[in-house]
Image 1 (cartoon, rainbow, N blue to C red):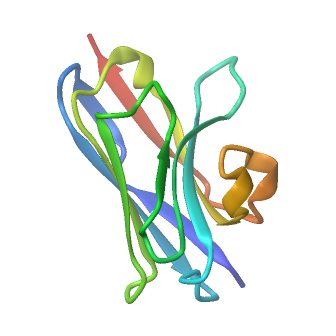
Image 2: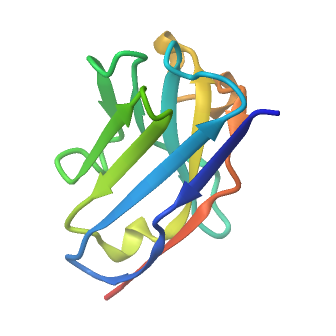
Length: 124
């Protein structure tokens, strides 16, 4: 059974940092694109960041570029999202997504596996 489990969310003040982790089990994701998405109340799920199978290529939403960094450790089957200089508008449930399509990393429909999400709340 394939599972993606996120952790690391929480409450932080504006300007603070959080590091999200995604633990994958049930299969090896080292050959696949992994991504992070987020969904705020009343809004659609939106792309945040993605990383190619070897980590050489990374992709970011314009809203987080320069503040967030995605990385992966294939030996541990882990994906991370380092979030710095957080803003209230970053408040959302953050989801880890697995087995994406390299040419379509920003589309949630192109990922085959999803975690349950972790809440990130940024206070002003």
